[in-house]
Image (cartoon, rainbow, N blue to C red):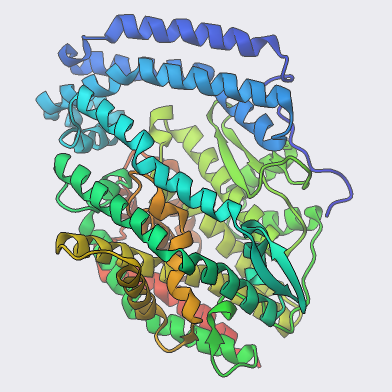
Length: 593
Ligand SMILES: [Zn+2]
């Protein structure tokens, strides 16, 4: 959807796959890691604060030396996964990274041990730049096992719990689904059938849903065995690691606290009636008495697809960011000017979209397959938000302070989507356009904030059930799924009976050691909506606050980040602010005749 191919320019990194500097850097980095090991192995435990500062700075220098190689190899591979030279380089760099990571395991273990014996180092003024990094290390220390025990866990997972994930994806990728596509019966792969869940034709959506979940449900006992064993495995590992609850590991990884997450989930449950109200409004817009599960995120029937060229998308996004603040749009403009975006769809290119941080160049690279839909423009605005975040972090933080937890990492990206929404609504020339934009935003936020919350409850219910010695078979698990789902959707949606098996296809539930992946999405969405509410009431005085948040990187905890601008996520009131933004969008939609 562009007059010219939009392909990224990677020459700031390397001149090409055969650039001799790639091998040269790998050789240099190998030597640097060996020097680092020689200097610090067995000695970290005895470092003074000044010595630890030097160690952390040295660690950053070593990592930054080869980071361009890692970035470059992953980018060229994503741009064309069929290119054998790209595969070869990617494979070589992957192995190099694994080797270095193993070689540096001592650093992580010794740093943990040092902080365990000298926790006061965390607040030592010499180490002020790394205070929060050290806090995060310290929080993990008491849950670390001995080196041998850690190795045993890795080994048991590799052919144990990891295999469930493989089994689930193999199942999905080796089945065929019979779907009636606009009146014509077709046998489809999972990916193809899944792509029809958003089809404009209602009967096609219904057929795809019933076919996918019907077949999954028929093997429900197989998936139940997997999930039951994964839950039991996790409970045993959690106890060994002395976690208070099955959620604690996730709270530590996401740099947050139980109290904050509890408050968030309570607010979402309170706000669910508002979401149900939206779903009823949407039913009316679709000419239905009540939505079916296959209509929740369906496009409105009277909306013909809007089409955008890449240039139009660029102009819209630059204007949306500039309306907020002229200097805030600088990172976005630079991304286009330096051609750091690869947008043209082509064979062999990786699916989906991402933004990769380019710390050494104080910039980023974005990949997407831009087909000119409204949703593609939103995706681009989202990824450019990530690039903006990287832009501010690279200018204000050292590399170790750019490791932002997922609940903060989506701040600029979701904010960017809201800025685009704002502009599109202001410039819409017809009610159909306004409705399409509002429904798109509400559908998206509804899924991320509300539907995902029901998955947190589902996961909590599974662990409570195991703790109470209940046997998790297909019926029990599906009952928990339906119960959690209905806590959000109530009477606003009618479900096909097959949908009780919906949990079987969520890959996250099968991933080893990745429990409670879900609430960070809810947190991120609602955190940004709360910020946006603040922006709406404060106007221009809010601009420096957002810049401050983004500049902080991971030098502060998500709670401290909110507190620096006088917000308190520990209160339900904070989260209600975010829900208010959602409510305002619904009211705007209802005002349209
Ligand atoms: Zn994102």
